[in-house]
Image (cartoon, rainbow, N blue to C red; front, side, top):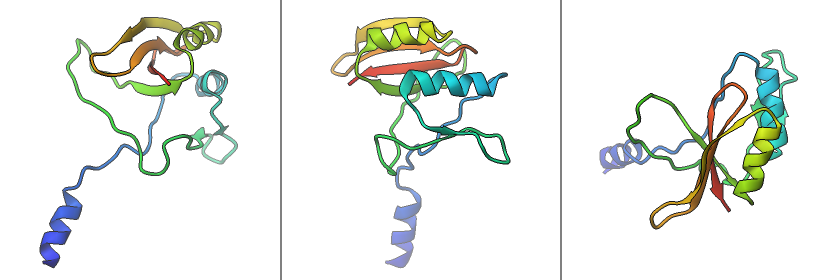
Length: 126
């Protein structure tokens, strides 16, 4: 029985519990995300690494998906109250629109923006 419990615990679905956004100007990226989503980011540490405080979702982490694309990339999806306002705010902060809002089949309405360094940000209508 103990072996079975060990096996089951090892093979359980492992959630995404952290993300990392990288770029040439981390201070500017930290400010972009702080302003766009209201994230609390602490870069005042010996590592000069911007730790983002956890928000809605709790310690369980978030789900995700894997699909094909013409180029490899990772997309972080953030829930927002208003897609159009969030896209406009991203543009005002130096980002750009990548995909206008659309309804996914049997799912939420989504859009995409890019940060000032070109990282794609998925937006999900709350």
